[in-house]
Image (tube, one colour):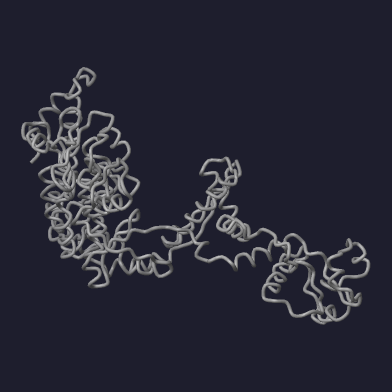
Length: 564
């Protein structure tokens, strides 16, 4: 229970006092007390708004108002299970709050939803244990649910409010909503799948244009991974720009699929495009010879479609057929005598074809050589090597596996409906890894470096930072030794001696005056430089204050020094 009276006294003592005159711990006390006053103000406003709505129930509307057009009417601002109020009372409240009518109506809806649909959250709000804004967020996110579903959410979320960061609270709330209303979420996901597209904006005065892509998450992940892959290749080839510049250059490479394929192929198999001195397949072939192979035909298609005369009128089919029978017929392949005179002699072609009566193709140009080389080289590469690699960590609850419909958590994305994730994986090459048993720790190691398997297990145990009220999540977090590592001592790197933290959080512990202790598996204690003790566990972060109780807890968790 928060000591509201003490915070109130501290806040009032600070009125008119120059903060620069306060000691460091006094200044922190003043900040905490002022923050509590803001909470009291916001929460008290919601409590008063709920009581305002009680003063104007629907049955209080005068009969003559119901009989005239434009008169007062009953409305239900909140969700299922909340009472109706008079429409006119909303306007009165809005004017005195200096807010638009729509804003006032939403505030009434929030207050009534909290009181009637989220009673546990409302009780903590009335005790000033949580911020009213967090309660309003939950009310608005759950307004579409039935009363029974909202009560289920309330039972599941109430204890986390105020103990998780805002982002982690929203993620937890989304997962709970998916669990209680999976059918509706599935329908919404199917509708959202149709709201996709690619848009570009206007160029700015410097000739820079932006593009916005909205597509299924796996498609975006694959595209971004491919852009990153080409950007890395450009760096290896000498591009000296920043990563962002290389990423933008990679988009330009992808605009020409042949360039992109060749770049990736050369990076994957560097010798693919080396010329073979014994290979004469790229030399001109007589028209009257055997039918071209599939590769030759493909190269012919590339050469024809890449011609400089694409904008000419379609030729007469009769003329085309004559071109293959008579060397004197004008056409795209036959060529007139004066055109042949302009071509340099081709000894290789003459050696292959001594019959002057047979027509000859012009010299194969570089574009055609590139196309045929690419086609033949690509045929020797495993197509899987062209796909970018991207790893998704998908966490599936047991009940989801049993029912086929429920919550799955995708790292760096958040909670998702299980059917949507199943659709995603349908187009992917899936590598199934064995289930990792997190109940037993791996064997400790002597080195300071953390083995890959141990890192993966720790991030599965602790998907987010264990620093008080941190919002950092993901595998980019640092894994820090709870007890500073000492060279020469065995088995110091072990799962129960490590914890994830953001980089700045890690730095204030390692190089600053913050201290950390592990009370038991999954429970960490932190002490700020001014003496405040925080407890962090699976239920969130808890401020224990700076009193005797907090200091006793801190001392109780003191570790046993490592021995040689």
